[in-house]
Image (cartoon, rainbow, N blue to C red; front, side, top):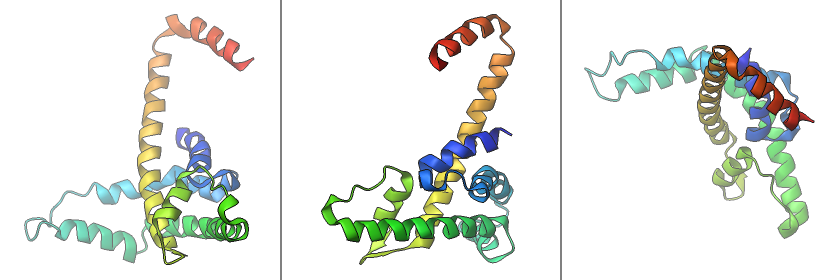
Length: 168
């Protein structure tokens, strides 16, 4: 539940307002961390053979088997490719007067552009890294806040009144 709530503003901040109502992308943001974490939490049982063997095994398993990582990455690519094309078109059309959007997607587009071409897969990989970190830390922080709030009824009235002032 908290992941779904956190995913909505995260989509807007990370990939822009255009995709903030896309239910499938919101689901990807909400479930990506849960789907990838088990693969990353495997103990490094192959490191006794070679220090990087375990990491290579985990990456291979996520990218080349029927792992949820592939599904989430494809959802992200399918959504951002249209946005990237629109932004590149506007950039060419408006030239130096074009003002790029202030979101993380644009940052990764700028970093992943080489010879005028955007590496969409690289952008998607970077976005997955950001989503993984952002969703996990934010949902944990909100869970902790709600837990603390629920355990301290002496602050409820004061916080409710403060919320009323801010909301009006």
